Image: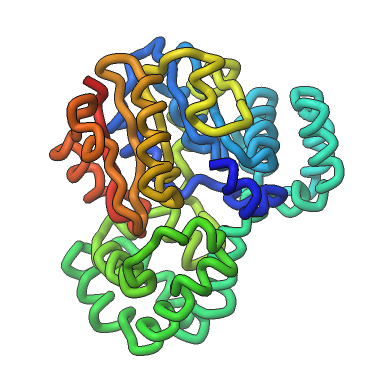
Length: 362
């Protein structure tokens, strides 16, 4: 795993938002109040979402220190500001004084995070939710590619309220043009995604045809009525979230998260290293960390995570294009929650993922 830090640039924000569905994560893990939860930090969104379960502790861990500076910033904003100002500060709504707001909350940050954000104040002023490499990849698609395929009215219509049948007819008759098929598959090819979206190293283990796979998953979702309320899809096609917000910023969740914000701690390192400092966990949000591991590394990591999980504790994680399942390699120690996993996958807002998996430690 240490080789990853040598091959991948961790001096940039790779993800300014979490592109994994917090709703199915919470339903799948279903941690009891007072639980200890390990969570891959990424952009912090789903680690914050886990605070709605009123845990004893959420440890947000990531090998990318820059991502942790972002999580720190969001945590400070949630702790010190009301929801309306948080939305303005992060970039969900307009603001002309984000630098001033930063000055009001920076005392909550570590010295290293303060230095980072003071050196990157322009990122804050532009709205940090737009700062990630992955977000820039989507912005490139929505502003440079999509206008060659559909006019703005057509894009807006994909989100217009309609029945499932009407949504499918709209996709088949209007949306799924030859330009959509051609340009979508080029833009979401393994080469273009590696160069402009993720990192080529994260795609090293991928053997499936990337563009065809993502096209088929996008097609299935765009035909569904669920697409109309999908904040991830909205950003992909418009470069903003509109009125659709991620779980941690929805009104019914924000106040609970704010009340429990001090229960979230931030740790630099790999997921299994958090166990050394905090002991066994009751649940783990493992994002899609197995995607870029070879089989040997995956099994070694999985073994450490199983060891660090309490009996009946749940492990939740996503497969994008590399099939990895802990229970397949550790059948005697872990049970695959097949029915639950398949049910949650069907309603995943992250339509580009192949599977969301819940395993229970025996």
